Image 1 (cartoon, rainbow, N blue to C red):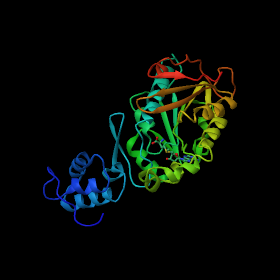
Image 2 (image 1 turned 90 degrees about the vertical axis):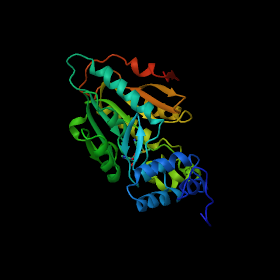
Image 3 (image 1 turned 90 degrees about the horizontal axis):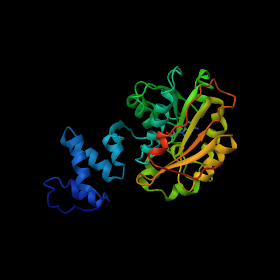
Image 4 (image 1 turned 60 degrees about the horizontal axis):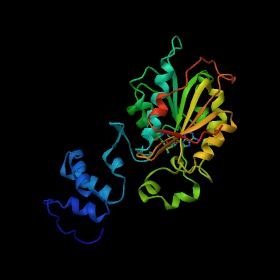
Length: 297
Ligand SMILES: C[S@@+](CC[C@H](N)C(=O)[O-])C[C@H]1O[C@@H](n2cnc3c(N)ncnc32)[C@H](O)[C@@H]1O
């Protein structure tokens, strides 16, 4: 920003609303109120306003993001969970709940792969599932530890991070892996491009490199009848489901137009080997929360 900022009605004294507006914040009044409530001293407030006016995402400045009605901790250097990922979380909860109803099956094992600050694992807090989450980012796992304190966290590259004892035991495997095509990153909003790590965004040439890796290995880790849930976009969904189908999974897509959410679902056949396995009913609850489309088989 250059030069003094003119005062704004309802913005007494410190001109915070005007500064935020001049920096391009569309909801300047709301943001000013949030920053004021987050700061304990005037100098802390000044530091928060300066960061926000400098282009840092509001959530990283505040240190939290709202997700499914709860505040999750986020810190600089991590990916900020998006509203659309609430569809992945709700679908995961529904799949866990359905599988938990099977008598004598024991707790469902649920894994959030590429967990970031663990929005999906945190959403499973009220279920009886044994929840695991994994990511390559140590900074993200530090947030995940606070957001999902009962989740077992693992650090590393995709399935390499998981304990071998989980192989063939996973009932629900959920992932919001990076899926931005490499050449689209430069046209993303600066808040994402400049403040979120590239490893959290870059999905390779067509955006679904990680979806292919997840799908190819998932069948070794899922129980027969287990499910892989992968957030994708509507335009990339055919690529994501093709990767799942190539691994032998039975696929469909769940969308929530209001949230802009899209989840590719791949179910491992009961007869497939590679898992300890219990018989589970097909989840009706997950698909009832939103529309189902594009069966691949
Ligand atoms: C789009 S962010 C999503 C984070 C979180 N699931 C969410 O929805 O907020 C993708 C995450 O995948 C992680 N990641 C990228 N490549 C990975 C890999 N090969 N193995 C494990 N995690 C990876 C990144 O560190 C990042 O936290």
